[in-house]
Image (cartoon, rainbow, N blue to C red; front, side, top):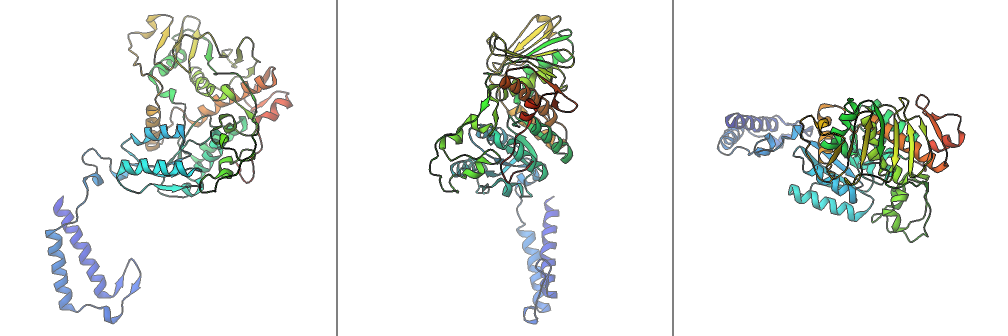
Length: 458
């Protein structure tokens, strides 16, 4: 291999010398004048010296460039850029940086302090100063060296930014909730399908073993005919986000307030909004726990019913429960209380012959030990996103469909949005999965979408 490289670089230098003698530089297209021409005898001496130098001191290629010493060769690396890297985004960033086949190359954020923080972390990891910084996410999306993006902005940006990224040819890992309403859910799923991009919403519990096994039991009939699936909404509230008294805006390079607002309704700057979870849901109807935490749990329930279309009937809350019904007759129950203490984000699946309940502790409780059928389910505490990120990256390479794909996210989010509308109106609503609208209900249909602030478009 070394001899081949020596000969290759000797040939390159020889050809470069020939080009100089002939009076033409191919890379620059510049014609040499007569005074630049090298005499034949000097040319021969130069050629011999160049060849000898190459044989004695060949160019050194780092082993990492060809994949030795456990390094991933450049041809197999996925170049990632991050947009909106705040609290949750920093956690996601860590999951990406753990992967040996990821090259994190650029960060975009409306806050200067976050841009600098992420660049420092990335550059220290790689031992260089190569991480690019951007304030405008469109500049990052314009970079041809970016293969995929991590979007961890506030939810007011998730759908719009994901669609811009897809149209720019980037694969997308987007935090949840990824849409603000039913219409956005449908448009986003369609955009991902038409652009053939890989999309993974950050519902990382789909890639945790105990949750996956619980869904498997429900999906495959191990619990008998499925009757009910339960999701924990972490609060039942639906309202419109408000305003706070305006304060002087920082310089745009410090905090780009207008870009932070993005497609959401305008309001005066206030630092509270920069971390205001309610406002981040957008300028219209706010999802509260039904959409934020519920999108995790409902997503698992959707998986348990084999990712079928969303429920068609949604009832207002009674005794802390919102009951929705699928076309099959299976009930989706949003329930706040009476859970087995198995950690946050619990789900429960009940069939005619058995049931299973699981939560973020990594543990499950089953109606019968026989349901395990000799299996040992690995208990992973908390709810790490590393497996979910790995699933996304593998699909970027294979062009496969990740577990939290756009259509699965669309169905789960529609279920949350429709339940939220029933909660907000405090009455029953019926949803048609063919027209994607509420049946004979103009008031509910007005809540299917909301206007975006100029100049943003879906």
